[in-house]
Image (cartoon, rainbow over all chains, first blue to last red; front, side):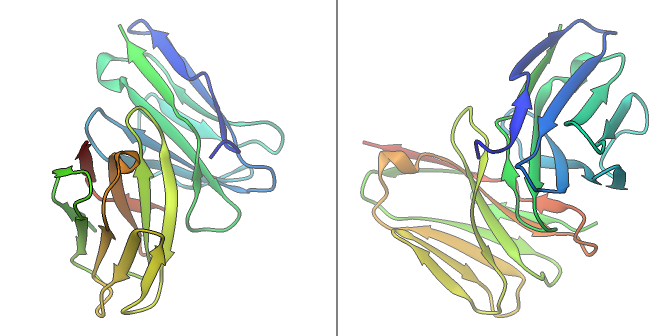
Length: 112
Length: 111
């Protein structure tokens, strides 16, 4: 849904660099989800946030990955010291209530 | 952990033929959702089913939720080339904090 804005759409990083993925949810939506999709695979849950709070980060690797959803501004998914295995499409989704969600167009991360 | 199995993984049909994808869970679900993702695109929400035995229709698409709320199906009548894409079912975790997506069924429609 065009209402969820993700940028950049494509991101290329060298191994060891940092990747910052941004997501602006639909206006008024306070629930944000991040999912990762490997080529030809389904979507894997990473983290669920509400404004200023991480509700569930059980799907996110313990190291190198972090997420935030500040009071003002977009949600950020941050990957430090990227490795080739981090190459994937990262989708953000938002909803007004816990439940079905609108997805953004994703950020395709390529680690070279 | 909770798993949502989806079959088939791939389906090729001639334009005009029908198509069905099935989603199964080992546990009872509070609801189930269906999404469509076009090649290179993002998942687009289609529908949410909540009630046992529920059947919903959207033009040529028919969605069903099983009586036991453990399985669901999506049926497309008389497929068109615009139906091409991957169809995912998604079920909430016990907490509702996350959704488990099925592996998806990739539909190819041959003109």
